[in-house]
Amino acid sequence: MARDTIAILDFGSSNNSGIARIIRKAGVYSEIVAHDITLAELAQMPGLKGLIFNGGPNRAYEGQMLEAMPEVLDCPLPKLAVGCNFNVSGENLSAWDGAEADVINRFINTSGIERNWSMEGFIEDQIAALRKQIGDKKVLLALSGGVDSSVVAALLLRAIGDQLTCVHVNHGLLRKGEPEQVVRVFKREMGANLIYVDAVDRFLDKLAGVADPEQKRKIIGAEFIRVFEEEARKLDDISFLGQGTIYPDILESGTKTAKNIKSHHNVGGLPSDLQFELVEPLKQLFKDEVRAVGEALGLPHSMVYRQPFPGPGLGVRCVGAITRERLEQVRESDAILREEFENAHLDQTVWQYFTIVPDIRSTGVRNHERCWERPVIIRAVNTQDAITASIEEIPYPVLAKIVNRIVNEVPGVNRVLYDLSPKPVATIEWE
Ligand code: XMP
Image 1 (spheres, rainbow, N blue to C red):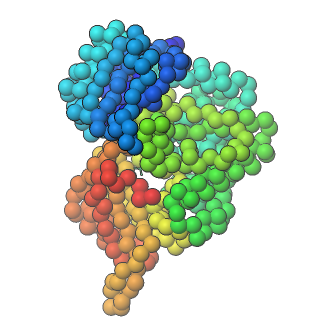
Image 2: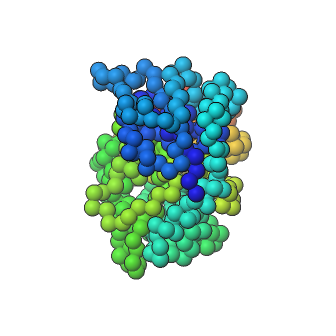
Image 3: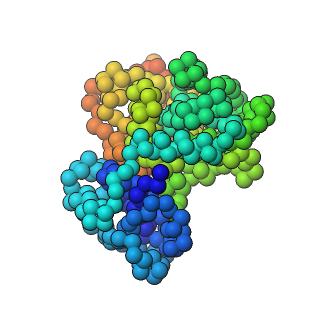
């Protein structure tokens, strides 16, 4: 079913995704497109009913003013132009009665745009689209156990049943106890065809000595695909690769106007000789929408609201070249942090929390002797869409307990620091 759609023309503003989310919350599908999109390209968007020109100071880009195509400015579609005074960010979206939401709601009403975007409708459309795309062929899915791949698995299971084979790769960069849990939950509860691959040594050998974050991401992404190709060769006729790519991954990997912030491993890191066609049914969705789809598909709340975990896993939290020793420090300190957050019920209110171990050491005193050990950094953030993020105030007694446990239980760690930097300027992950 073609649903009514509003296109947001991207003139380099940082609030494009905030506007897109406000429109979707108003029940209308929205997409961010390049500022110089042509009329022919707009004609490819089914159900397009309105255009929003999102300007602002960044409209001057590399010495030039970004301009829309005259043919687009002249077309008969309803149009709304907004400037940077338009204060929409991930944080103030909950202020749903704000002036910005009013402007958008009035635009929707006066333009006769139908509010027919819902998660149920999305699922219905996607199931039909997946069946059409896949036919009677088979799909291999990278099932990490995170929210995105779990929701993709559920959607694909609903659409194509046992034409789906899930592969869980243990690349050695997963959280403590996670590979075991993924196998238990997905095999038993979701009844998926699930293959478990132990690739720990293989990944860590490839990553040995590699300090550059983008290089690490690319190695992890490329190695992932190789593992899937090997698994696919053992199976009959796999044609498609399922992926949990979501909209912020696409936006942050750089649109025509926006500069690349960092490549996400499931977008920028794909090898050029990829032998599968991709199935990415969540690539139009923001994170909160992915969770809503998961709930609508009947996934357990604990799985759908589990905190996000990056594809490259603990690899991007073991800053610089990964060593097994530092990786264990990340894994053990993360397990302690998660346990104490759950004890203090902070897991209900904090969106993402984890630890990082940088490749530096400092002096300390342990058992009356000088020690030369590493610090663990705690990161705990709240966000709506992972595009902006604020720092959580953690009660001091909880922090004190975590510090005490980490320096006493994690070998080779003598300090714990708390990262107070919001996004922007800092990203959520350290690499
Ligand atoms: P940043 O660090 O970009 O993170 O502020 C935003 C959100 O994305 C997650 N993240 C990733 N997820 N592959 C992923 O699948 C990646 O390469 C990647 N890098 C960051 C991060 O954990 C946060 O939730």
